[in-house]
Length: 85
Image (cartoon, rainbow, N blue to C red):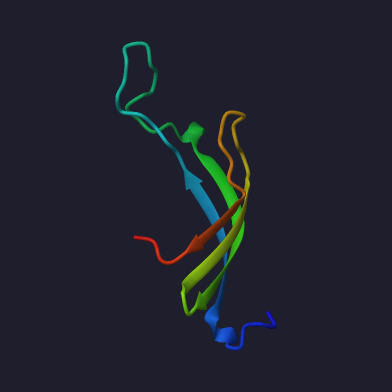
């Protein structure tokens, strides 16, 4: 990037995320509520760029869901300022 003088302050990443959300507050008519069902795992791949700026790290990520369900909320682009806790 032309406006970044110190190129060592740039980081890039490729990632594969796998995850699931489940509920342990079950009702009588719910099936597989207490266990993780591997068939319900969601996968995504993506790329990210982090710039270690004077304000803190600025991270931009792009992701593509590989097996999203029609009811899933999708977040393709993400921007983060600062570090995670």
